[in-house]
Length: 244
Image (cartoon, rainbow, N blue to C red):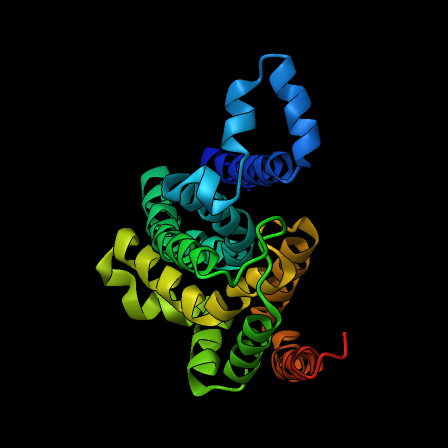
């Protein structure tokens, strides 16, 4: 994994996490940055939908998606390279197709965040959902862990060799789109739990990334998916009854 496309991908993931860290810095510290002329940093890191606007919210969700989802796709990308001894161009097109799907998700998630904020269902500071919305999201995510759609998508993610062999003739761009859609089918509900943990909560993002990576591993994933679903539903009950 020392080829240029791998180094670029790893650097991109690292930079996305660094950007998310900077964006999560408390407002008081960002204000200090403004005093020293870091006007762009201060403005870009303003994350409340009313102040940031839709475009910057899309950028934030795009960074989150890249930072969290690219690591989950690394085994599949490595399988693709081994299967076809792919060139730089083929791998670049595959990754571009994959990330394009998550850019589309970022657009939808940012739009949802703007709508929820205007409806008063998000805390203006932490961007976490109101209890009723948090409970609903946890129930949806928990039940989805048991759904046939989730299982079908996970089965493809856990067997990338079979997946790519079935669709190899479509070329790297369409393969990337297909892989992105399969990963979206696996992870969209867990990604939306950012509204429960608080958008831009690095602890949530780190934990969710680890969980999604483990879910896609053939030997480990089956011990993660359904127990996680039960925990999410239990969390919804706790929040719904006001126990925390």
